Length: 153
Image (cartoon, rainbow, N blue to C red; front, side):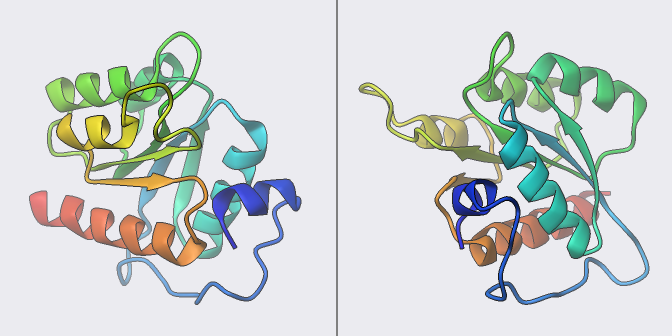
C-alpha cells in the first residue's frame, strides 16, 4: 500500500509491511514535515509502529523551530508546502545540520517542466520518493538513512 493510499484509507496500513525494529536498544526521532494532515498521520503511525518517535511539523518554518529545540535523527519532508517548502528546508538543513539525513517525498514529482525529486537529490537529499511509493520502500529508505545518520555521529 502506498503512502497516499494509506492516507486515503484512514491510516490502515494492511499487512504488506514487515514489522521490523529500528537500531537495537535505541529509539530514533524522525521529524516529519508535510502540510497534508492525512499524510502526516499515516506516516507517523507507520514510523511509530516500527519503533521510531515522530515529531510532525506543518511547514519548513515550523520544522526549523523543532530542529533548534529537539534532537532529530532524520527528516522526512514533502516538497510543496506553504511559506517554506521542502527544497528551502534542504538548503537550510545542509547549512545548519549537514550530518542530518533527509528524505524527500512528493505527490507531484514532475510538476511543470521541473523534476522536483531530482532537484531535491541534487540539493543533498539522502533519498527521494514519490508519495505513491510502497510502505516497504519508505521503510527501507528510512532505515538506511537512520543508519547513515548513526554512522556520522
